Length: 337
Image 1: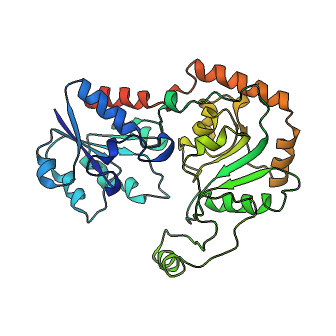
Image 2: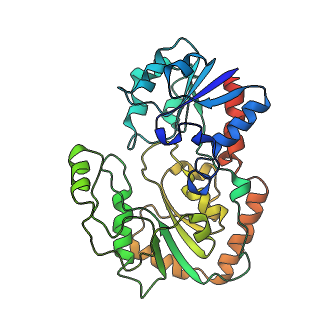
Image 3: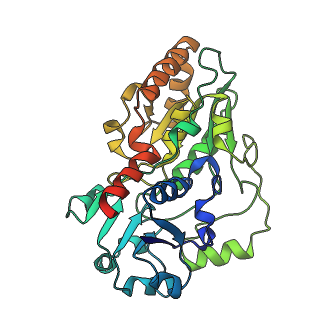
């Protein structure tokens, strides 16, 4: 069969979706492995940018719902089996959750437990990454010199359940407590003005003031290409989702921390307990910032070595399989082919 991939984001067009490392830390590598498995089973898999290419497909898979007025949205009218994969939250892509669009698709794959509960049309998937290639079991018994870090861009989106403002407030607080805690911030844009870009006014402000410089936090260490390369030097790493209050929304953030054998300081979906045992992360929901600092400082080097040893055993025994790319490959092959 000829299977087409329709990307909402044109960044992934012209076969770029199938390039390893196109996004750091394996975040978008899944399409490479999906293509590999589809072709192994005798199917072609290619990105679709035109109506002519779309009409030549036996199946279309939509990587997020296209913009309403775009050419790609017109592909939903074709009389061929169509499938939708929803990964972004309603906070970032509200279009994904417009129920009027669900009628176009035979099945919809999503992390959203509230949709999965509605009918068999919705199939549960998790955010996934290539666990085996990212797993970095280093510095297990060696004491790590660096204490805690966070990797986050200077972004802000206003809306229900957003955690961007929480991250900013946490960074601001920790920046005043560097005499109490070894804390480093990585990510882009912390020396520039930034407001919420989720509305027209915010977009205009960001465009007008894009060159306006602000004083960056003292803890800022600049941009990085890969957080995985950073995490393995730290005892703790913040894993704060972009949003909470969304049932089942667990992204790669905590998985990257675990694969680097740091202790994740997690804030996000309560469902995490169904996948990751409590001993392997710290739920900071409801904790004051000062309490987080004291909790970090209370952990001894032996506590952290024991954590890394136990976490290594958990990963080696397949504990992160629900978040491995092979899990979504299996689901897609069962439900589509």
